[in-house]
Length: 603
Image (cartoon, rainbow, N blue to C red; front, top):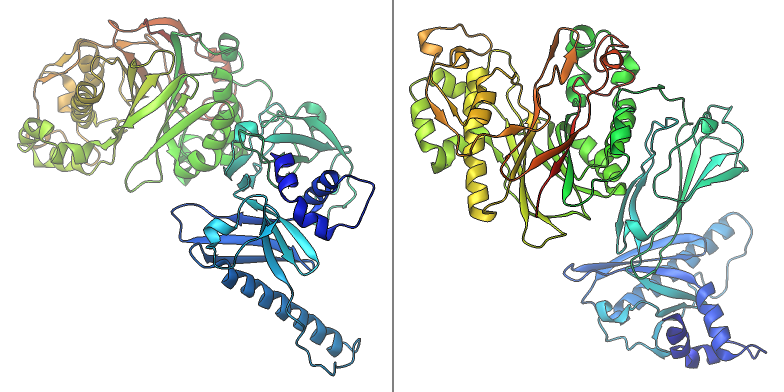
């Protein structure tokens, strides 16, 4: 491609280059490679384009209409250059370095032309057509190589907290390229940052750096403690075309990690990805920062937890390492802050081969996230709902809504909840047409809200049955979540026995600030649209362990006629859970424990 472009520009270069012992093609190739870049962003469907170039030590950025004639833009560039020279002359004169010119302060307009394939582009050609990749822009005596829609990092950030032994996953977003094809090189300071200053804040410009890695993610070692990190990245596309490289400096130095974590021993069971047709599933309530930072959490719920271990930056290090070590194919997360999803989980899990979707709870800053391994699955469709909205607006729930109308207090309490159900239909990339329906939810939390959870689960099951029947007939269901329900609850009976009697004790529960009374009670028989489901991880002593409560609230349910359990990754040893009294702790990022299992999905 480069040789063809250089050869096409030979007629132009023969006029510009002096005679030399080098062949014309070699001279053209060298000149094109040594030119300053003029970057152009011009995307079909957008009305405007941008062009950026550096002249006289200053970076110029211009935004113009795509359907504007080239001549108008070139004239604008010429005027911009002339104004710049006029200002420079006035500045020198005012400083006493130059006498006024007899000819005045207005310099001759610079010659501004655009060349493609060795010929000058007519000024009547529209911008969108004129600014081709590899064209040459001439500004007076200076020439620029036009780079149209070159791979570019649009976002590049390093996390604030760096811990030895924990993966550093930069937040990277790009245009016109592919992160999997970019080049990355990591460096660390040759000596620790003894000044304590952040990068760019008066740090010595001659800091010596040692290369330590060449992948997108870097895991600092204990030898890196006290040193800052630097990342050099070159954006590229799948064809090898590259854009302008850039560098990131960490704001702080690498700190020591917490030592043994609750999940380290669990990673022994998940050292590699599950082999098809098996798939590994994770369900995990990761504790939203919006809840972890409340005064209630710090003083009542988790008073035993070191304050720094409740900080989001610290906990995110643990969460990313834990999730990466499971090598899962499907990950369902609850209590995910929107910012955490966008700024932390997406960059980290993308680097480990997973794509994700997010469902935000209305009126709240946290929600549900489902990730899937992109080499195993393709996302076909999403069918997320807010359970209360579906109850009141979807005709499929009309009968249930009518029965609820007998109890206005309970109905109002359910309608006020923002509980969501995230539904993702995935297709197996190893066998076309084979689909799975992955559901993820976090039911109402209150200990005396059993009747609310029963109605929420009834709505969820009806919706899931409808989705599978309409868009994925015959697809198995994998239903994950924090159900806030014990094994003896009505929700669990409805799932595992496919029916629930009106005599179940959960119908007699009442929510906050309510007393059990005939007016607050409502009982009904419920029938699940699914045959009995199986709890894939079996009976567990607890999945939530805090100072005032220990119990099983989290589940992964499957349909036993279509999937079977191959492996359940053991829960952390009890002594690890209680090393720091309870959860969360410096060694565990949440008050919940992740469920991890391998499922066999026979072709």
